[in-house]
Amino acid sequence: MTAPSSAARPDRTDRADGTDRLPPPRPAFDAHTWKEILHLLLNLPVTVFGFVYAITALSVGGALTITVVGLPLLALSLLGARQLGKLERARARKLLGVRVEEPTPLPLAKGGGLTQRLWMALKDPVGWRTLLYDLIRLPWGILTFCTALTSLFVLWPVLPYLARGLANVDRFMVRGLLSPSDELERRIAELESDRGIVVDTAAADLRRIERDLHDGAQARLVNLAMGLGLAKEKLLEDPDSAADMVEEAHGEVKLALQELRDLARGIHPAVLTDRGLDAALSSVATRCTVPVKVTVDLADRPAPAIEGIAYFTVSELLQNISKHSRARSASVDVWRAEDRLLIQVHDDGQGGARLEGGSGMRGLAERLGAVDGLFVLDSPAGGPTVVTAELPWRDRTE
Image (cartoon, rainbow, N blue to C red; front, side, top):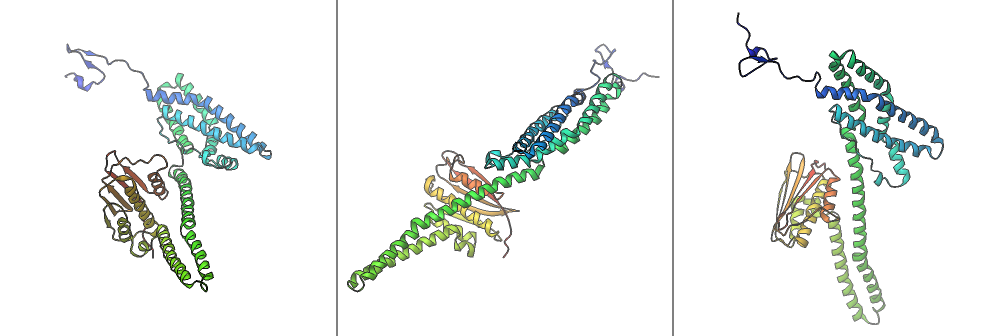
């Protein structure tokens, strides 16, 4: 019988002279197993501290809620629980390899008054889930510590399997109680931020309309009333002068009507309602100081709200081109791609546009973001400038 070849014996390595040698020594457990064992041994001190913190916070804060300091103390305890959860997530990432996203920070700086910030902290689901995590883990921490420590000396042959099973339970707890509520929580935070942007934008638009009415049409109508009053007084004693005043008042009426039309067009142009984006954007392009090519490729019209946002986005971009770009030509393309309405405005101007600061571009980006849109600006120094905007497509319901 022939001896088995060295290929059939993976525990040995051939020497250069044809003899066998043993493989190099290696540790009984790999690094991943040792990390799991370390995590289990750390469970006892960590869970004891967390349990004491949770019990103290709930008992003291709950007992003092009948006083003035009770609710603020409980709110601070929940903020502290958030930090404990952050440390636990970091420990799980380091030792267990669990990738858990950090929850959205509480927007306390935007919370308004002290009462609003206090209520925001008290209803924080992340803080309450962390306190629950710390409360229920004390028996588990004692069990895992004792099992891991005993197995190191008594059951070390099966310790890797025990460590993996116990660590998997820890992974489940971390994911279940310390992870954010994924899309729901993120979406709530986005909607709260977008609501503030929409409110600020609406307030700014109302102030602009009020200012335009006060400084434009209202002032002309006041002058018209005064002029007609003077003409009425001179109607009998100086008919020629009164006729001139009436003629001047007629001109003022025409100017006031034109200003009111312009103001109404700025709120929502009639051509957009009647004929859609193609005609409305072509009308806007004629008022630009550079030649603009408009291409609208839409089989159907979007919802009025989306159509209006698209119109005003292009209108403001063309105004920026007229004022700042020093361009010789520009183009506007609008088309639909699945459930998105895409807008691209291109000009061959000097470039250098930025989103930073309080620029109009920044305001456009915030407005589009408030309706789940996107705003991408590519404007290197020297040009050209390409602005791409995306809006969610919603069908029009007549």
